[in-house]
Length: 345
Image (tube, rainbow, N blue to C red; front, side, top):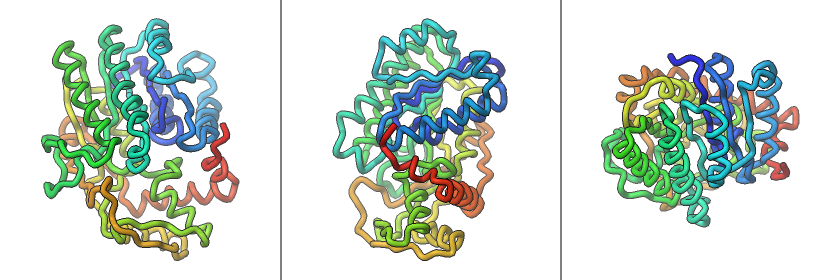
């Protein structure tokens, strides 16, 4: 395991200080692995107030590290090349954990240019600076969405991934290919992690686990269930994902793509039943046909990550949802859900 490095974590879109980013920062600081710098533009894809709140909690928890300048937050975007240059000039950055992205498969179809700018052009900005400032290792959070609709299951990293279903998946796959160029030309160590259906505490309010839990409290809330609930997703708990990210930051591998997922897809109808059992409530559902932007299944073959990263997902769906439900109950009853869904920063 590495010690005392300087990690910059671009979170300037919706991976954000809200969910995956805040959990990764938490673990890096908890383990005292070095200086952590985050850049986030706190946009309003979902509530900026939520992201500010999460950062405030981390700053309170790690007040001494803030005082010692080992935890630094910068408000800005990876689209701002001048700001990025200033950051790289000021800090001796050794590692990049690139989580910045415009997320959301369905919304990408109405904002294609925004997704290309954030997910492709923004990634190029970071890759270029990583080369110029001799960064040791670049970890890029990609997505299982790049696999598209395929009969080849489980998904393996050598699959072609040449039939994207949405602008989101196309932008991520394009960034993966661009990363290979920087490895080939400049020898930049790049690990690309294809994350599978991440869920857990502080999960995004536009994602199905959060929506379903909200519907348990607000019985008038009707959930659209696509593909009549037959679609399958490989739900992966946030702690397991963060373990994979931290392991990848410790291991320069040249250029590698690695699946980070639990490896057991679950039908959506069964997923809903788990949450109904936890809550003791029946969720109102409106069954819909599948959409062209959504694959019928995500299914992770994590053999490669187990070998190269010692990746070992520990949290099954029953335990993971129980942890998320406990968090959601506390947030809802203490008014935190309103913060999550307000777009006032």
